[in-house]
Amino acid sequence: QGEIVESGGGSVQPGESLRLSCEASISAFQTFTINWYRQGPGNQRELVASISREGTTDYADSVKGRFTISRDNAKKTAYLQMSDLKPADTAVYLCHARFTIVGPTGIDYWGQGTQVTVSP
Image (cartoon, rainbow, N blue to C red; front, side, top):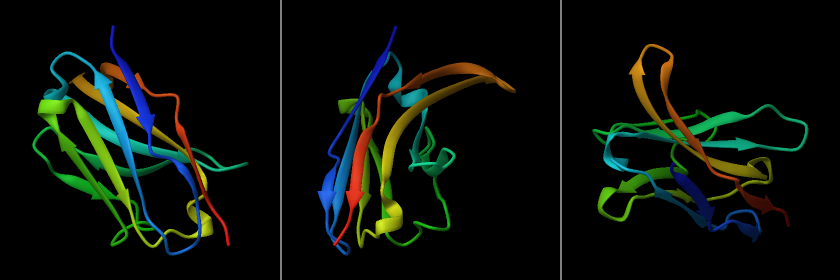
């Protein structure tokens, strides 16, 4: 069994930055795609950023140019650097690790989430 723990959330003012960390105790971490999701109050869960096992990244349009996802396989940790934060970024941020076996079948791990609050 594996585990994911997020950290780095907090309360900041608009325009400030935060770096979230996703520490995973997962065998073969380097083979997993890492996703950062967020869920704001009353909102559906939204995929914010992804990084594949090869290091290919993808971002939601709402965060392009402001957020950067990265990973350190040796540390089994992924990061989400968030800059120029806006009140609309306020949400619980969750880390998800996915190993696709075939089609929709795979292995998934979820963290508990870390709260990010952006307000003046």
